[in-house]
Image (cartoon, rainbow, N blue to C red; front, side, top):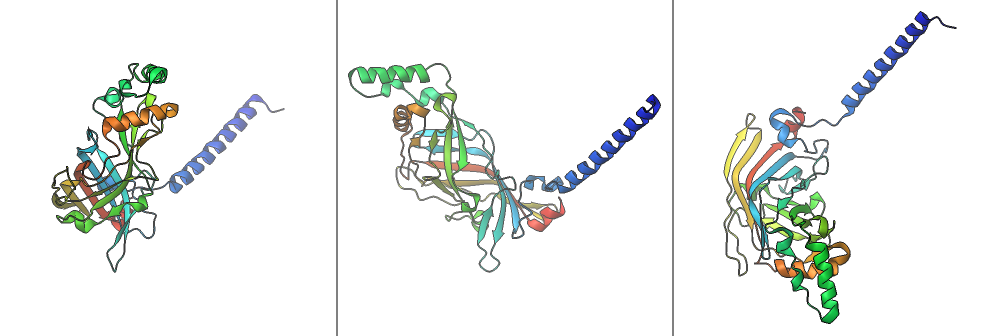
Length: 305
């Protein structure tokens, strides 16, 4: 048997060996971790720089504006980000959007819906006859008129990031052609609406093609004007900055809601559609996004990882 001193020495030796092994594994883990641009380039932290075909990185932040769908206007109170990279055809100049490195191309940013649930759901609007109408209204009131009234609207991509339209030339010039085109769906979030209450879907997205120029919508909407903003550079002219720009569109259509209220969706979908005015044809919806866009070449981003 080992004496106590010898046992202590053996334990210390094993402990030191384990610590050394853990240090080696940690070093390997750090070396294998995915690097991201830092410092002045931290805004491009989600740029997919490992993509060998990538031409550049892009990060756009909309800090104010609004989405109006049908009769419901939701102001942009929290900044909404669009991030990722792009490839570019050297001959034609055609650009294609590439998803963010972690897939979080359009981070989910809930915006407060004015009026909340009480503004969207009025159980008295249930139409029927006799006992059936009374029963449906009673069920609606029991579920949806119990004090949980806050509703958020969260814009999500309804298709892969590769379907996003990007035209940097149209971003830099006052143009009525698409600068950024997004296939979207809008999730209405409230515990009582369930987890699948959406305006639009992957199969039927809301296509919003944003421009910097003047729109030509069908009535009743009237033309509105975007702006290119102010062009500047930083990091020795390696980062292009477009600030105080405004991207607009009021010519898109929006489908009706689906999945609102879970098993009660047969009751709630028609009520919410009626309240918001959905489906809403082109000329009844508006998107205004004001903010800043930054872009850099992929080599510059890689150098700062």
